Length: 237
Image 1 (cartoon, one colour):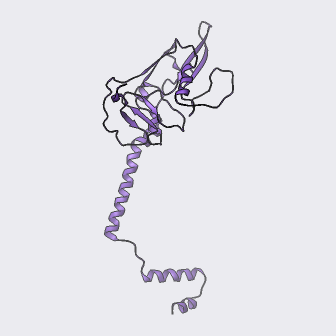
Image 2 (spheres, helix red, strand yellow; image 1 turned 90 degrees about the vertical axis):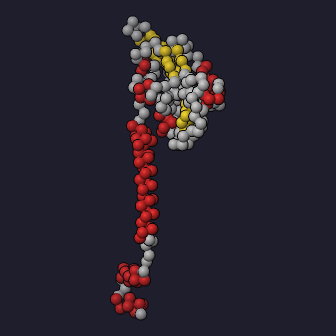
Image 3 (spheres, helix red, strand yellow; image 1 turned 180 degrees about the vertical axis):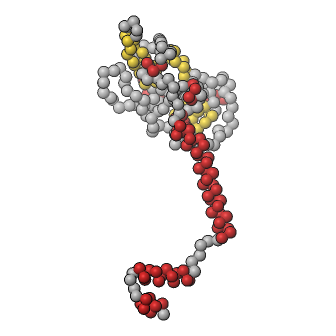
């Protein structure tokens, strides 16, 4: 793979632009998953665990072939199986390989609070550089500006048949708001507050306590303790 294809495009939890970003010499890359030919052997699932040195806990059989049952921080690729009776009355066993979708606009990268944990390369690959949280992948060209994973399905007009493959996913509006417009606005308010405090200090100066203020505070403290005016006047003399 050419060096240019490994240039970083975006990094999680940072607004610093990546230096020297160049377009990949070989263009963007994508995965083509033809589930019409998949036999559900789970070799890709096992290879993912071996390559990334992952080992999930042993689960329990609940009557389905999925194992593990969902993506976790220790399972980045999962084969999902769905049974369906077609209109002809025949049973169809629909299989889908689930994992990172390498989105063009990754919601996981936007939402991740850990700097550098998730990176996006200029060739389209979204890479989880550090572990410790659940792997996330969003799928849908309109909702996430396109993905770098393509599926060939038996029923392309009904993706939800394949173990809940979402038909219309979207990045959470709260994530868009907080990681989008709200973040620079909050930083601007903090900067204005600091600037106002600086000008107030230079023009008005620090808040100084006079001798009269101290005497009044001591008198108020004695009054709160219930001392009589004579006792207070004696102590002042």
